[in-house]
Length: 457
Image (spheres, rainbow, N blue to C red):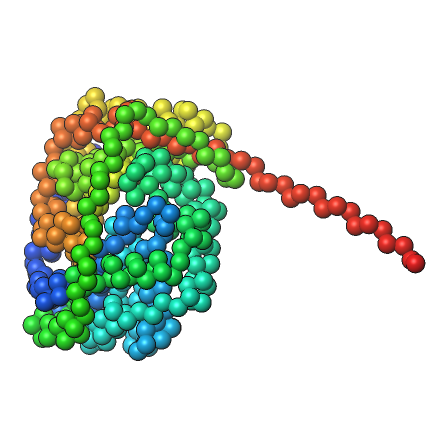
């Protein structure tokens, strides 16, 4: 007799499989155009609500920086809000808010993107302002000096004062010696201090050009009606230099790398990273499903083993970036429970890897992981913003937006044997970088010398 729980799970998986058989990416494909200056334009008509997202993606991130100037792309992202002759400092975001929208930006290892989410009848306004700052940004030294301190404070909060963030940063620095994935997106303090206004201007002139950008509009629009406006606004912007995109590959890792990080913290933190391929390899899809098997939800292997059964971890997880320009990291982590030994946690993480290497996951476990990945993809694409995000990311890493159509097909084709094979091939000891955060007690304030007694003269 089947248990009610098992019957429910089977019904849920069947529902998700039906749901995921419909692909919204194909339901309304983007209209693609390339302007005379080389800028790619993707317009997606989604008339279900009178809203839209406007996004401009530049193919520049921390991977496009040089040693000694880490953080340049992120700093320029901040400076893009400092104004032009037409829209001075503070005007951009104020106008968007006045028109009922929101705007922001983000920088990654591979790209920098700017967006406005607003009513569909305000799209032309967002387009006009984005075209203006693509060519007319004013970089002023006083604003740069002020914003540099803002970024340094951001680094203190995210990295210096966050022990777990510090360990992630150190893990990438140890796993990549020559590739720019070595340095953090936000940069090192020394690099931020050494950065100059000329560095920013050179970065802007090199990478912020129409032929290095993708414009995406998703929402209640008509592509044919909007295209003339886009041409009018963006085609006068001259084509820029063709930035260098290909980088030398990181040399093969030939042995395990281990390090300890001692920081003020309450509990230890363990991370285990492995260098793996990106979307360009078919193995990336098996790695994506492997991440889900290990870490998605309370039924995942890491949670069940380390949190529920062994009770040596407060939180566990795994992370893998399939959509990256260059091969990256697959990593596992554990926030160690007070009183537990980091050695025991390290062994527990390795046992879960060895278990996958020795025997493939069950069909039920594999299907559950696929359904989780597929459902997340489908639900994300129901959002104008998330839909545009996927298209922008695919274009910016060099995959092309059409490859988005194939993501689910490749993920559905992953077999249990594929999971076992990639675990054996990539999650090896010689390819492993292991970092352990060892908590240190807070520093005691230095005693102040007693004030000298002042007698009456």
